[in-house]
Image 1 (cartoon, each protein chain N blue to C red):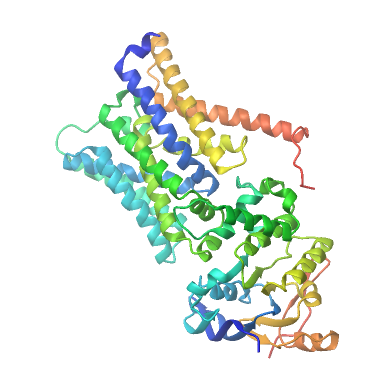
Image 2: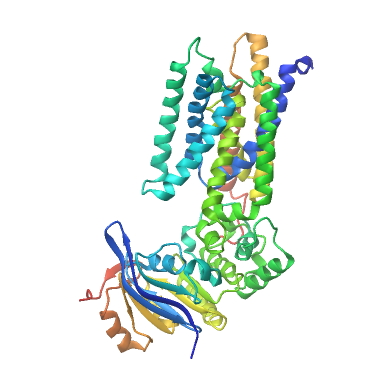
Length: 283
Length: 249
């Protein structure tokens, strides 16, 4: 097909593949450990780092990576050390991150940058440098998760028991927060800060309906993520070409994902109600 | 003389300024089967967490197998409340039991670990459920799986938190029979707010309502009545909770 001849399209496809690995693996933890609010917070905090990048004249994604990782670990640390609930701290960090971003950008001389592409993503603008960053993030995530799979599973399932068994549960939780921050950075180009949370929840939650292990969830949600990204990319391109409507690819990806989520959920639900799925062992 | 498994001396724990444990003394010996009963909010979970080294007391001394709890706790098989688990978590029975073999970072589970997990599942008669997801288990079955996970650690002490909440009576009975078998392998301590279930099966009873009243042994009926007058206890009957006993002076 003609569209694959364009370099920007190839880069977008490669980016889609790379980010779906990160979101498939880390999204599975976000879903089973019920960390969607935390992940949403971490995503929005990154805006502060983007603004910082513009202000300092650095690559905004790199400053965002440092800023977001530090903030995510900061939330985790403050939760352990203070009496405040994690929920509250996420709320405070979330808004402060966004506000700092606005402040930095206001302080930056010259024309304001194209914030829309950071907020809602622009996967067609992915550069070779972005691809390398995504690849590095994938490698870090795959390495960390394969080396510490059984410990991370134990911490997600039953943190206290893991701790009693001598697993450094606190440190692993901070590691998980850092990996969420990395994933957010990888996803910003594809779907944008505001929509990141969709790719960290929808593919994994859908995958949970079809598999029964965390590993299976990671693999299947990677596949779902890639499908949504490819389909959304293609659909927004075709709509733009034929109807002249410039639909953001990020929004198209998310809407396709949400639609699949509700449809598959409804099908599963109606089957369960009609008794087609039996659950042995449950009275 | 039996060896001492857990020793608490004058242990105090506060949440903010509210005392949760006041001067608790406790000695658990090898071979003990101790039930700790007390009302909700009486500090039962706090006491378990102190023994597990998850909460550090502001005052007092805790030793577990002669070590500080953070070190000695690896010899404790901890069985948390089954009702608190997310049943939708994507994990199989065998994966849960294998968690009892955790300990070496950056290594997979060895053949011995897997064999140990199989033995533990066999002991609680749940081998047939090995590959099931935990969403396919009843409350009583999950409880047995959590016991298997604790047994897989090869514990010197089994510590159970409210083991029979959310479990029907016949299941409770067979569960306590299982514990009766297991007490040959390890000392057992369980906490519960349900005195009726506990008192029949355990060998010793202590009552906890911030302070611990340890009576050393469990004598039949009149003694139990006498003792329970000593501390306030919620007696659960027919699903309703009544405070039937006097406050401790």
